Image 1 (cartoon, rainbow, N blue to C red):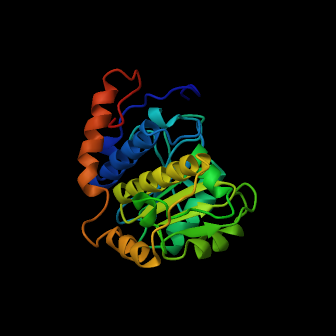
Image 2 (image 1 turned 120 degrees about the vertical axis):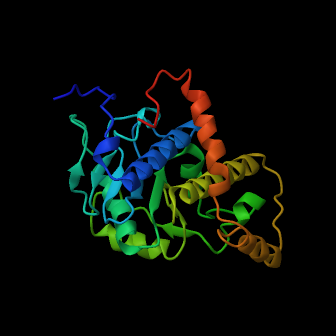
Image 3 (image 1 turned 60 degrees about the vertical axis):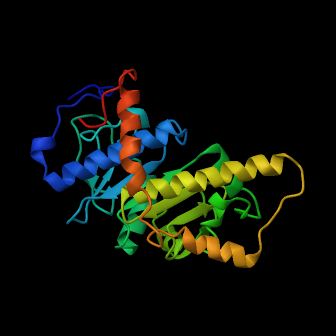
Amino acid sequence: MASRYTTNWPTIRDQVSPEEWQARLDLAACYRLVDAYGMTDMIYNHITLRIPGTEHLLINLYGLLYKEITATSLARIDVEGNIIWKPDTEYGINKSGYVIHGAIHKARPDVAAVIHTHTRAGMAVASMKCGLLPLTQTTMRFVGHLGYHDYEGPAVDLAERERIVADLGPHDAMIMRNHGLLTCGATVQQAFNTLYQLEMACRAQVDAMAARTELVMPSAEILEKTAHLYQPGTRRPYGVLEWHAMLRLLEAEQKNSGFPPYWV
C-alpha cells in the first residue's frame, strides 16, 4: 500500500469513461479554485459532483489539502457514503461529507454539485441573528433565494438529512447557522460561482458592520428586481463564461506551486 502521505498516483484517465474523467477534471479544478480564493479550512469541508449518467458522487480524500487534489485522487462514492473506488492509500473520506452532500444529491436531482465551506466571513455571518443583509449588489442576488439551517452539532447524524434538505428548499445557497456556507448547482461551475458571490457578500457585510456607521438598504422593489436579474438563466448561465478564465489562472499558478497539477 502507498504511504499515507503519497499524493502522486498514476492517472486513471484510461480506466474511466470520458464523462467521469471530465467530471474529475472539473471537480479537481473547483477544489483548487476554492483554495486560490482563500475559502479553505485546512483539510476540512467538501465539494461533491455527480458523475453524469450515474448515482455516484466524486469527493475528496480526507487528509489532502485542496491545493493537492487531482482528478485521480478523488474518491467515487454512492449517496450513502460507501466507497466505490479510491486510490491505493490509507486516506478515506469524512463522514460529514456524505451526510450533508448525500442528502442534497439524493433529494435534488437538479443538483450536480454541492460545496460546503467554513470561511471566516461565512462563519461570522452564520453567527449573526440578522443573517445575510442586502447591503451590496453582490448580496442582492440572494434575496428570496437563500435558505437557513439551524445548528445541530457536527453533521454526523443521518436524521439531520431531512431537515437540511427542507431548509435548503429549492434554493442554490444556504447559510448553516453557527457553521458555515453551502451552495449547489446544476454544474460545478455554477455552484462555484454562487459560492464565490456568497462569500464576497459575507465579507462585505462583515467589513460594513465593522465600520460602525449607518448602513443603506435599497427599497424592497429594487431588491426584488435585482435578485431576479441575477438568477442563473435570467440573462446567462452563471459560471460558464468565467470558467475558462479560472482554468487559465490555475494553469499559471501551477508553474510555481510545487504541487501536482489538477489534471492528472
